[in-house]
Length: 119
Image (cartoon, rainbow, N blue to C red):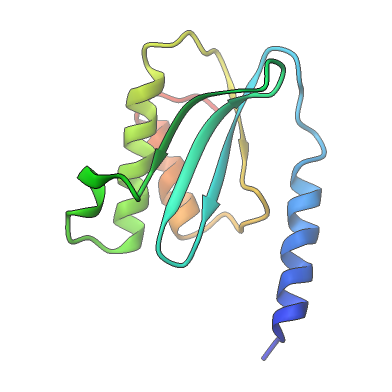
């Protein structure tokens, strides 16, 4: 088994590598954070340093349902896409924040794509 220090170093390398190529001017980015119990996503405007929309599994209406974590992540993605619909956003870049693209992160992004967010 890998030690916690090795896993942490791998995570930090992935996180640094995934932040390299973000354009700054007109595009927004969707940043994902996950913990052992919850998952959160934000649409961030880096040029103006503002958060446009956010959704989390910590919200009251999502946490009362008895779902597994992957289904909960897809509900967060759907909720985020509904909050972004009214705003005039052309394209969003996906920032996986060093997390691997599978499981909960993948289900969140796929639900956001089905909701109308274009990556």
